[in-house]
Amino acid sequence: MRIAITCLLLAFSLNCFSAVEFRKFNDPQKEQAYKILIDELRCLVCQNQTIADSNADLAKDLRRQVYEMLQLGKSKDEIANFMIERYGDFVLYNPPFKAKTGLLWIGPIVFLLIGLVMLVLFSRKNKVKTKTELSEEQQTKQAKVKALLEQGDEP
Amino acid sequence: MLKYIIPLILFLVMAVFLAMGLNLNPRDIPSPLINKPAPVFSLPILGQADKTLSNTDLSGKVWMLNVWASWCASCRVEHPVFNQLAQKRVVTLIGLNYKDEPESARQWLAQLGNPYNVSIMDQQGRTGIDYGVYGVPETFVIDKKGIVRYKHTGPVSAKDVQTILLPLIVQLKGEV
Image (tube, rainbow over all chains, first blue to last red; front, top):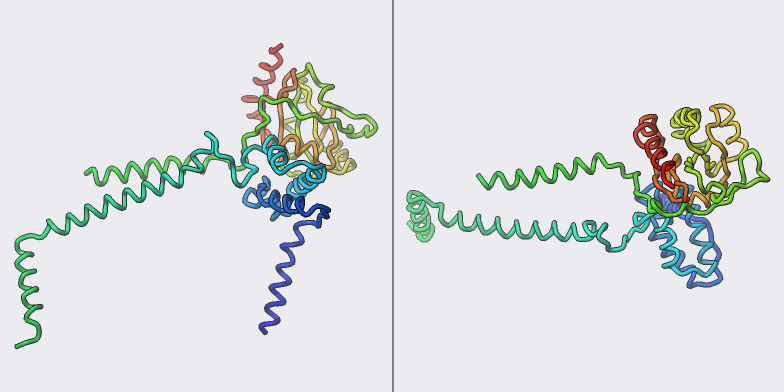
């Protein structure tokens, strides 16, 4: 049974590889650059996939473009710039830090700080409250309870 | 009282941002090509494959580049709009037939009408990449100096033509 399930899962996993066509590289460095690049470039049709993941026609064309430019001896930065010139910063999964993308990068940190500040403020307030808000009646009751507890089970 | 007002204000600010986010179209990615020279192409003409058209042939004219394909469903939606625009004869309309079979493209135009002065064939999609095409149909407006002045992603509606494209064309035609 277990073997059957494994086989089934493996059969499904083949689909993942079939999306990307085989590219032949003579230079292992170029192959490395190719893998990094197609993992960093966004497929603009599917938007939440890299061009390495996507089966869309545009992703295929962009992979071909990356491959051809690498074979022509272009560097990784040159290819990334080529894509940005045409598709904008959005094409990179890691957009560069600029005035335009600042909110994107700093936003989460700002929200985290706001959250932390709120947490500290609220927890302080609550502490003070529990200390001050015992009425006289409650205080006498509390004293009684304490006395009972200290007395324990002794008759 | 303040205890209730501050979270309320925070909530309202967030609600406004989220509402804005809901109304944004994630497919509307701003084109980096705006106010840059139109990428160079020289492509075979649909129906006259031995002839080519280059963007330099169009300098001195205000022209529009409409990216279309016979396999593209939304192109059918905008097609009547371009047929109407073509009747006005106010602008040179170039069709970029994107990743299509010439035969199906010809049939498509025969069936639905041909609003284009010329259609050029980009079977490999390379000119498409140069223009940052990611969702057909797309439409570019290019001025007399060959600078891209406007890009529309998705089907163009009659309202877009009236409110955006025609005024822009008139303005660009007035420029030297």
